[in-house]
Length: 390
Image (tube, rainbow, N blue to C red; front, side):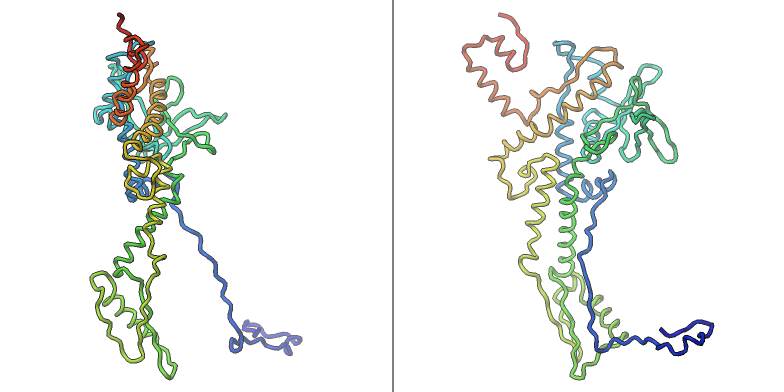
């Protein structure tokens, strides 16, 4: 290698041959590999933005679960007796002055699905009034003690931080979904469908780009002369600018291309297999619906014949997804609120008033009514009602 340092060579280096680089006569090898895919982050804000706010399948599935679960009516029991009125039911009917009970529960279920966590704070005034408020998951951090047990919630609002106790007499309740690798935080169901979510969104962006380019990929503008000359940098930049400004976009689709001497346009097209984005999107949509527990038939996704009809799919949706989630929350809220409301009550839901299970309820009543070996009181007890005697 030729020396280019400020000092001179030593006497022993004067006869060293100078190495010179020359590319002529040698081959060139380029090594390529597929780039790593870019996936959406698993935090609450990313899942809410890319899933609920940008993906129609995830948006509809989350709303179906949250709205159906929030509409299930509550019922309170003291022993075996059903209570018509109780402070617990009144608090759930109007948790705070800004939200009705269904709105409050819809937000709670939405937090659970999108983040795997829901945080409830019970505010008690000196006058005895009580309100429940929900804390947004991305603004809450679980605080653990030296032994690793959660003891408080740290809520951040702007530049202000405050703690809400999770201990026995505390005002905080942390609801979680099962997470196999975390002791304090739950796992979001939508995070399990993250790859399908990104594929569905990417296919939509790709189709939009094709439509913006008149639903076909760009062609190749070939410059070939007999002398084998190349375009200068200035000519290349000018030609590229003219193509982008004059022939790109849906509004300019089909405009004839005016070529100068030596230029030739080679149109390219996608194969039918490359254009088959619809099946890829439907497959990704089915995975999203599967992760959230919504039958694809209810979302209008074709290619899924798991259920014979819409009514059967709707019944499975309630039995396998909605009611287990509502029962889980009923036990958590009942255990949290009952000791604070001076009553030994048990909170549960009234499945008989769920409209989506009306066909199943009518079938049960018909079977019990035809059972002639049962008395009227036994029939009432079989369908969940108390005996009247006689």
